[in-house]
View 1 (tube, rainbow, N blue to C red):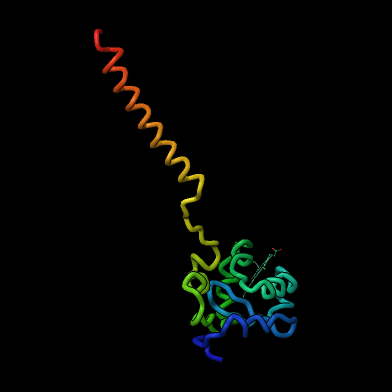
View 2 (view 1 turned 30 degrees about the vertical axis):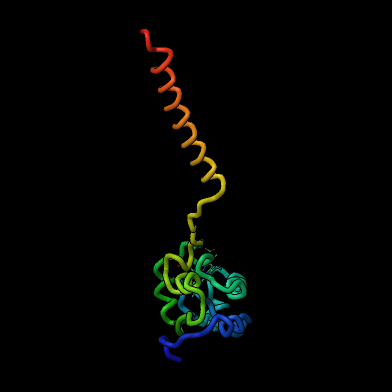
Length: 141
Ligand code: HEM
């Protein structure tokens, strides 16, 4: 199998058993079937990660050393096929940053716009108070 091959999520999700286990890490696909028993973290965490769909986050959480990363090369069979997926999911599947960090999309929430309006009203009230003071109260000072 060529490492340039691409696999769909649905195909990858069929390889989650003890003798046939594929992992998605940073958008790449690894066949760890022959490594399960030798994995220092145990085979069960790998099976669990495969069943979860994307193993990137759990892989990163362990802070694997350079021996693990160089070992991975040997298990690489391809990458995730992203055609037909929404743009956000494509980015998550292929980009190392998005692949393991949930994307925070900044949205104007109702509380933000409420605070914005309050700030505008306060500024207006202050300006009016100033005008009133200097026009009527401070006029003879
Ligand atoms: C191709 C994928 C992986 C490879 C080649 C790999 C390899 C390794 C290696 C070599 C170690 C020993 C420590 C080190 O050198 O960093 C290790 C430890 C560990 N791995 Fe992985 N790993 C892989 C994926 C994963 C995933 C997806 C998880 C979590 C779900 C995981 C969980 C762990 C844990 C918990 C340890 C720590 C064991 C301990 O220190 O007690 N690994 N892994």
